[in-house]
Image (cartoon, rainbow over all chains, first blue to last red):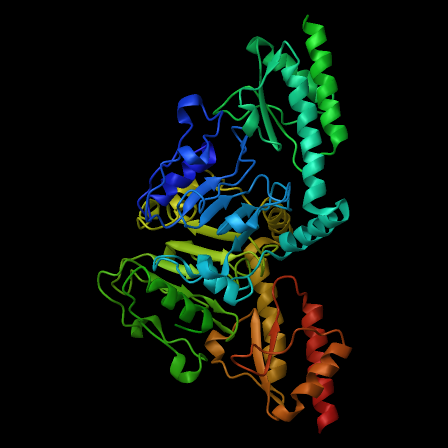
Length: 267
Length: 267
């Protein structure tokens, strides 16, 4: 449990199975990721679930755990909703990956699921047919009426991703964008990001003003510069910059320029 | 069970409850609707499910059953996917109504659910949270990320429906459209619709050429006239004209003109 979304996932999973929380960062406010070797994995587990980018907490898993090397040859299930298509995935370590389209793929209302062939056909009896991935696969994702417009737009995005140079190029671009913003935060006296450097998200950058009385003035100034949606999630507070694939480095530079400008006006 | 969709529904329901098929028209190829007074309703049932328009079979329930008057004070659940917004609904008889948006409301990928307040909060433990209508209602339909574009377009369609004069006006228009087409079929020597007149769908009009050897020529001629998607569902065969809200009476007239023209060329 590395943040809000995996916390929700484990609660939902309790309806269907016995849940063992192998690791949780609740104690440090979800600002770190423990090394996989320290996880308390159950023997005989059906799968291990990780949310590989926590949007609200700004925590990203930069290297997928190698469960086999840890002595647990069970499927790794990843919720990669909020960093899908932002970087390559080591598919040799993944059993099932799922992600909502609305961050990096297209309009809300579409979910991408990638399932290893040998994991198809093991749905619980209570699983609705439209969510039994064997049924879905057998019907080429058209067992139920597919969300055609969202699929069409996702197709355009996939073509765009290829033209950008694919996943390796996207990763390089997203690394550069994130480095620009984290560096501006770390070198300032006013802003702070509390996430451990080895697991800082390249998609969602939460940060705080050391003087929270300035929050409203900061947000008003940001809006005046065309920098929107910077208020942090209510469960965390502070600010959050989401710099998904659709944000070019120029957008991040504009935010960095504003961060510096606002800090100067306060000194 | 009045056609393909309610047949699928009762199979799906068997995962979660004991199913009693109160009435089935399988024996006549789903071309009739038995009077509710003849239904073999179970005492103590949790609900009664009816698909009120069967797209594939072209069977529509023109008057919702009054279960209370039949001595069964249980919720009526209707799947009104394919005739939603085509006519008024007697909501006093409905416990829950659901329908996909893709016929009369907007793009595929959105489902409209109307639930009577007192029925909220009775989900089975195995029900996924996003499908527990109490959870959905408590979060104003935003417990999970909503399909924003589909909702936006549905909003435009709702405004359009109001400008047309609302449900009463849509019903009058759809009655006129359906009457025009059924009359052309019934008065011809070449075409036949096999559904009992009291339950013919105003949205989906399946029909057959008495000489099925003419099917390909009929479809090719239709395409040449810009009349598309007239081939019937593979489980039924023949032809099917879907005349949803988006089809104006001029579209139906164009089909009727072609029906007559094609029949003349064959005599």
